[in-house]
Image (cartoon, rainbow, N blue to C red; front, side, top):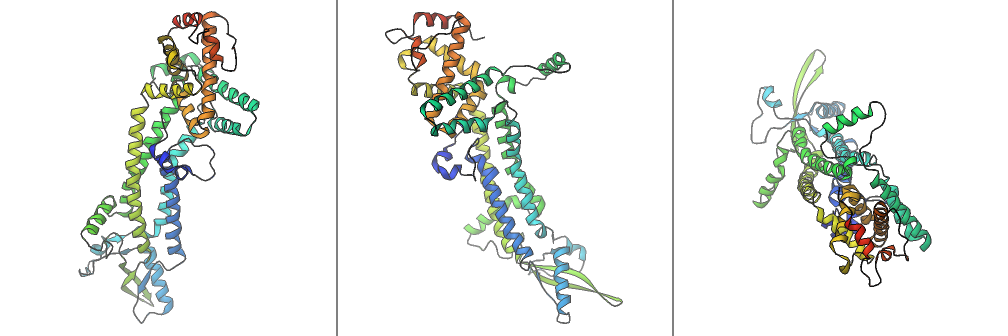
Length: 437
């Protein structure tokens, strides 16, 4: 199944760069969700945090009778207790309850909220890393070992690639239902009753968690739009549409905008001896200049990520059950080694290939090989699949005949051919006796 997306091929190194990672087990859309989005959120946190804690986040216009210390106190109080917004063309209500119905709660907490969003965006990636490490094979170490063969001599390279192939072959063989410990038979029977057809014993553990994690990416990106709406309390999920409509209409979409007002009002009580004097101050929120631009970029970004994540999930759900892409992936590398040639494509050879793909490698084996091919290249991947094919074919011959054929040369597949290049009669007889169950 081809997991490398079209964007990976178009963007090239830009689409795969992620710090100092040596193994990539995701595609570009996944990286948009768990890497590039987090970088943007951290940048926004630094920008807004600097404006709030280094500069002056609020400046209130105070009466002349207040001292400089009292003005400083007013600014702190209005920043901490929130302000409220009344449009300039409307009178300020005398009832304080009506004033506070338009209170702005969010601006002090924007840096913290952005950090929380970054953690949420990283969560599906952490789930993938945790669950993929429990699949029974060290994916990262296996890929790194295969990548290092570029630097080895021919003999060492061949030996390491054979080791990688043997490791994968053994992993595919050991995928079967087995439980040990206390009440193992009872637990096995209970598991069979609750079986949903997914897991390591079915050979589709990796692809199952891949689908689950990509659904999580979509849920996170789409859900964060509603999270922002609850946090800002101003219909943020239609914010982008309003901006586009005003921009197309030639209006200033940022002037006195109700979502991120520049000028707000603040009520506070100032105790003077035995009297309490209530003031209504007009305050400027320079930080909202950054918040407005930040959240409009964030709205368009999260909308884009939601659409791309949905298409990513849809693509995975459509392609994952299909058998032909998995078989074509193996045939591609067999042909590179001159194994699956046109003259060899009779019913018996196709039968063996079908068993190799569907009954031996299964979904997880193909998934692992495709993941490796995206990291090590076609040459190394072709040699690994050739060794896997030889191991499987030798074992099938041994099961049916009780002997392991001796390869004639470095391409052991030739040992199964007759003098004219076609499959030998003995091997055809072996294939004909094989079953798919």
